[in-house]
Length: 375
Ligand SMILES: CC(C)(COP(=O)(O)OP(=O)(O)OC[C@H]1O[C@@H](n2cnc3c(N)ncnc32)[C@H](O)[C@@H]1OP(=O)(O)O)[C@@H](O)C(=O)NCCC(=O)NCCS
Image (tube, rainbow, N blue to C red; front, side, top):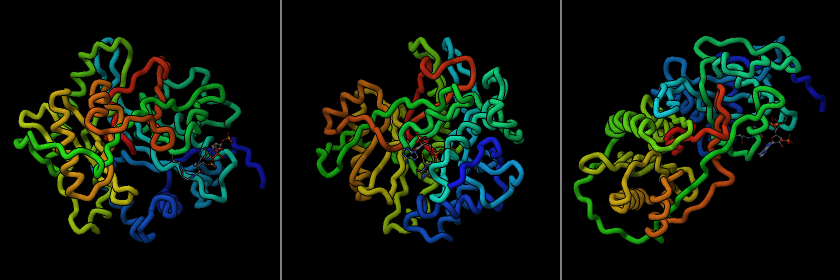
């Protein structure tokens, strides 16, 4: 194996042909149960989802500087531009932020440092350039990646690592830290073993796709107000669930739902006054089939009713597990009394973030670190 001088490579916004090639490459990994054509069609559908439109969904490739359009690029990844909140001293600022997905090096290129280098460079294309290290782009990596219209404006970025702490070693300079994992708490109900809660909440409303979209608009406002009024003294940040962010969780799986005898139609449930609610996705590919709560908001009094509703919808669709991420601690304790197991995920989807600016990751708190923002 020859060693590539990493400074001869740079990160480029993928051409349409490179996007197609990047998607073809991931078929075996992420297209399980789909033909290549179906895998590509599913991706084409993602291009039109609300959270992807207007250039918000981008593919990036690590390629030779002297051949940036080659289809033999080393590796690729994707980003979703989003709106988030940064809250300091109870004042919330709306900021541009990024969700990162589909980091992929083809097997023949693995183990040569390409993914790590691509991710180090990624900061330099998505972060607000005024907020990156003042020492500038590391000379040892050559010239900075070209500026791409509509990018270089991020205040923070996040990814959900399936490969442990690889991304922590991907900082914007050799001596800088990369993405830092925070919030791996997981609460799970095994549906068949869970007690059948009596329905004490007959007036709750089931929400379809339009219903949850309307709910996430209200939810975004509640997230802002809750963060501004929080007694937490430090600096916190959050993604917002509206504008196609939370809906991505179920809409991206549409092709799998079409194959089910009874495709799920409801993606949320809300109490009569809409003060308590949960939204979810169901992944039919997951073994065991799992309902993952994308967003939950409730006080302890309504939690039992809400869990009852979630188990009800789970049983209706033959779901075996119900999973929630980073419940507030009092609900986590309560969940334990309602048959759930609480544990820390150490392998899958580890939420990891990078803040761009004067703050350090250690002082930042990721608020509403739930499934809705995963990508
Ligand atoms: C994970 C992946 C992107 C790594 O690509 P790569 O170009 O071989 O990575 P690098 O050569 O830059 O390796 C960087 C480090 O990550 C480590 N690493 C690679 N794959 C890993 C894995 N699956 N789990 C944990 N660590 C891993 C390497 O050991 C290396 O660490 P080291 O330098 O301390 O030895 C590649 O294996 C891949 O595409 N896998 C399938 C898709 C996938 O899982 N993507 C990640 C989704 S979050």
